[in-house]
Structure formats: structure tokens, C-alpha cells
Amino acid sequence: MTDESAHSSEPLTAGQDEQPKPRRRTRLLVTVASVVLALDIVTKVLAVNLLTPGQPVSIIGDTVTWTLVRNSGAAFSMATGYTWVLTLIASAVVVGIIWMGRRLVSPWWAIGLGMILGGALGNLVDRFFRSPGPLQGHVVDFLSIGWWPVFNVADPAVVGGAILLVALSLFGFDFDTPGRRKAEPS
Image 1 (spheres, helix red, strand yellow):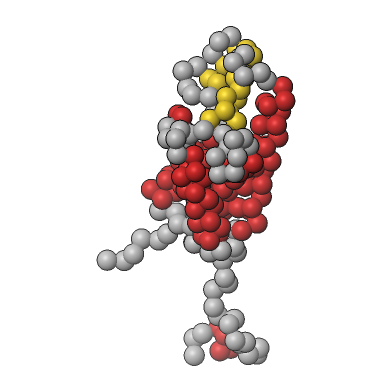
Image 2 (cartoon, helix red, strand yellow):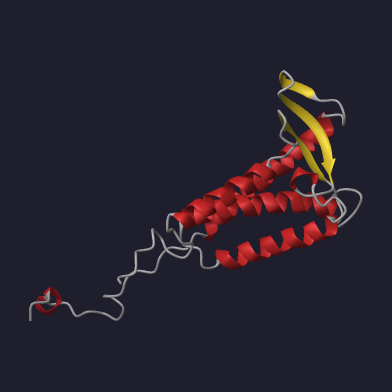
């Protein structure tokens, strides 16, 4: 026999020749989501307590300002009459990410999904707990840059996470593999 294990004096135990299971990245997902959620909640509380609606505070001239706005719609104030639908969609996204998180192996996917999860939860907190009431609460937005609509910490986290996931998909990284997926032999 040419196999080294045949010459070894120690017997193979069950599972010794198997590949180790890839490490799950649930903790990373939850950590990223928690950081985004905490930053979003803290900055919204500060914005509500320190800013007056309709009175922008200049940071860099008129280009960058703190501007308190209550948004009943989605991004760019779309679907303002459908706050409850947006709440249900965001809730479904949260459930989907939590379900996916059980098989999550890629650290990059964990970061991207964590950003989306934290941002979605941040805006859901507003939808559930801010006026005018549960499922219809208006999201607090307070960052204004140039011509771009006013936004909050959750918004760029969701967009950045989505961009990261698209890039990972385009470059062949999958959420349930630790690295790049190998090309199938033809």
C-alpha cells in the first residue's frame, strides 16, 4: 500500500478523513446587525431631541446639513400611502435573513446580510413604535447631502449591504461556502 495512513501505527477514527465542517457566521451576522441597529437608534433619538423640523443645521454650507424629516414612505419618499405594506415587506426581509443565517458560512455574506438586517430592523423600530402608530410609524431621517433625499444611518447600511451581496454574487462567492465557489468541470 502506498497510502501513508496504511503505514501509520494509529488506526483511523470515524470521520478523520472527512473535511472539517465550515464555520457558521451567525455571530458575525448578529454583531454587524446589532452595531448598525444601535447606531441607527442612537442617532435617531439624538436627531429627534436636538433638531427642529424645517430648520436645517449647516455642517458644510448648504451642501451637508442635519435636517429632521419624518418619512411615511420608502426610499425617496415613494409609497407614502402604503406604510403598512412597507412594514410587512421589511418584516419579511428580516425573517428571510434570519432563516438564511442558519446556513451562512461566508464572512463577507455575513457582513452584507448583517448590514441589511440592522438597517431593516432600525427602520422597523420606527414603523412599529413611532407615531402615528404601530405598522404606520414614520421613519426618522436627518442626514441631507446636496440634492440627495434626506436619509438616516439605516439607509446606507441597507444599500451598502445590498451592493456587497451583488458584488459577491457576481464574483462567484456564495453564502453557504467559506470561499469562492469553484468552477464545475465540463
